[in-house]
Length: 142
Image 1 (cartoon, rainbow, N blue to C red):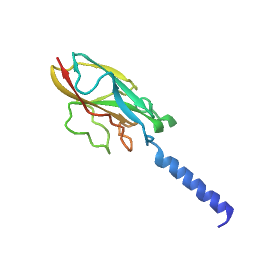
Image 2: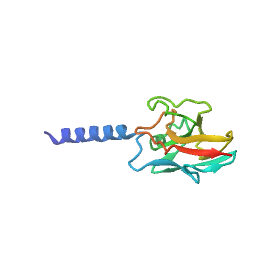
Image 3: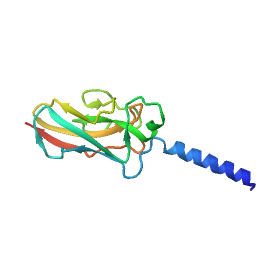
């Protein structure tokens, strides 16, 4: 095979690999709650802090290159199952979007048991591939 053809094939492979890895969190990337853990008893409004390692945070709708290596948080409240991971995350009282890249909130919750989980979304509110999802925790609100 001529040297020029080898370079062309290598270039195609490199470009294809870069496109395939866009929006793909690296191994070890994770999202999690800071200072709030499964089984905690809290009072409302609940102060919830979000953490991320190995990937970045950027506002929804970001259009520059950073969008391939970052996302924004969605807080899933009292869900029995995850939303579809191959389409945009719904926007309602159970799927709270943090479009500006916020990493904390104060949430009014009624007394009782509640579940919380984080899901990172891309610039179009779609989960990454593979999705970055926190552990689902249960808290008790007094």
